[in-house]
Image (cartoon, rainbow, N blue to C red; front, side, top):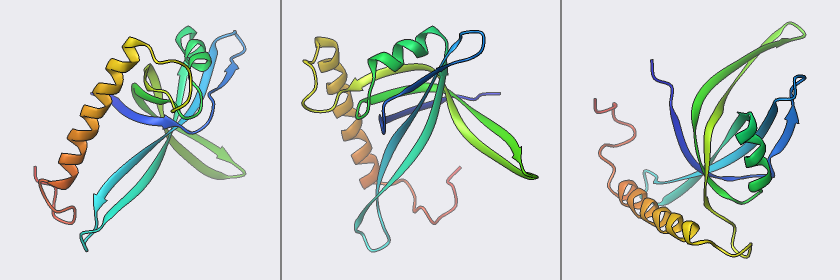
Length: 148
């Protein structure tokens, strides 16, 4: 079975680091992803989705110190469904467990940008161009059946 997630988004707040009883670092963060599309009247609409991300171990500790609110990151990981029960009611939540988090860009007005980040910014611009082209020319109407 395959369970793989790749998601680019902005951190909505600073990462929060905690430690498990045996000392393993755990980082919680939330990223926001904006989706642009044309509605039935042909007007551009934008919707925002928020995703909870959790990461474990030494890399997580590093990510917690390197990233902060507003940073755009690429998260690679897997989906997990957490289930719990409280006062007889069952709850569940799907979250991303990160295996890798890479910096795409910093918010404007922050520290000096390195050569590596300039390359990443140019990649980000290319991704935006591709996604804009894709949005403008959808392969099917969203109300139609899935085309496969």
